[in-house]
Amino acid sequence: MDHFALVNGELHCEAVPLSRIAAEVGTPVYVYSANTLRRQAQRFRDGLKPAGRVHLAYAIKANPNIAVLNVLAREGYGADVVSGGEMARALAAGMPAHDIVFSGVGKTRAELTKGIEAGIGQFNIELEEEGVVLAQLAAARGTKARAVLRVNPDVDAGTHAKISTGKRENKFGVPIDEAAGIFARLSQLDGLELRGVAIHIGSQLLDISPLEAAYTRVGALVAELRAAGHTITHVDLGGGLGVNYKTGDVPPDPADFGAMVARVTRDWDVTLMFEPGRVIAGNAGVLVTEVIWVKPGVTNPYVIVDAAMNDLARPALYDAWHDFQAVRPSGERMVASIAGPVCETGDTFARDREIDAVKSGDLAIFRTAGAYGATMASTYNSRPLVPEVLVDGDRYAVVADRIAAETILAAERVPDWL
Ligand code: LLP
Image 1: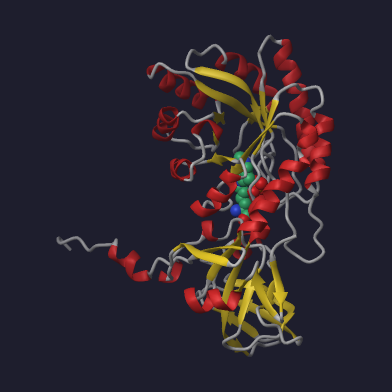
Image 2 (image 1 turned 135 degrees about the vertical axis):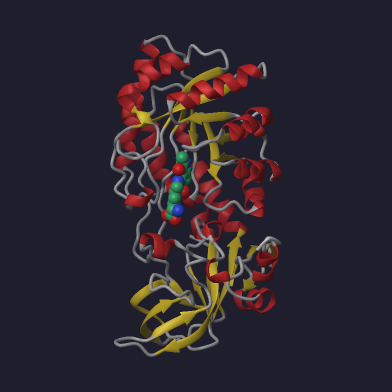
């Protein structure tokens, strides 16, 4: 499924040995495979072929590195952005403004204005007041903002509570039973071209039935809106497809997803929009780390690695599992917990797990770190920001520098009146 594999006993990314990147760039370092990104982008697109007119907006929050965006722009992907910063990245990567969707529950007036001025393709409105403000800002500039109304379908995505977004009590979208009224009022406004609806119920879905339930509700809403005389040309079905983090996970096949979409949306006659993030980038990246110590523990030893929760936050935040693998496996196995150097017990990647046997100085990887990895990194404990490398065949390049702790320190100052 990806391009990280053992060649002559050593893990490679495509044709490049990971030890070479570690020697030249240092660790920890994120390594991305351009050909995995392309493959996933193509699989997702191909899966949706039966669904008719489709617009693909890669959710750049998953991995916003500008080189990654460049690869995906060449695959014909636009972007789903949730901040002015993400919008600037998508534009800088050469994604045309009209292919960009601006989502997000807290878009500021300044961000809405920037989006209007850039000619963003679609704003996903999260509440009635946002729609009113967006219309005013657009009308004041003599234009109309193309927009859809995000609805909350009240469906349980069956995923981790922190990444579930489609339940009534979540902060996202307008309640689906109030959507027709809000749509009718917003559709009167001069500065808006309100053309449809959007949903996104959550992330890392391993079962597509909650998506089917949500899409079915949206289909009923589209029929209701049309019956009320509205023109509906676009429906944004969001993202959410899961990936395999753990050997044995069975993520949805994009072809099965596409078949379900085609079946549920058969009579809609709209352009369907999608915002995939993880399914495109997740398996396309690993975090390469070096073992600092193997420290005796009460039951099993601790493998202390030089990557930490500030570099890969998912295990600490969501108890997420990332497979751990030695770069040069000896064939022996051990049971250990894996932790980083940060001064918190939460800085633990795995507890009492059977892994490749490793010792101090060995290189290893955390898999499936291409999505929600580097982008969620911080400098906690005054650690540097982790660098990123893109591999394409036998070539590789550093696509984000390691930002040294000294550089971050240089941006701080002590006021002279202290
Ligand atoms: N569209 C919207 C409106 C979203 O909120 C998201 C993700 C996506 C699309 C992309 O979803 P995907 O296809 O990647 O599932 N940091 C968490 C994931 C947060 C997802 C937030 N929204 C994690 O590491 O699991």
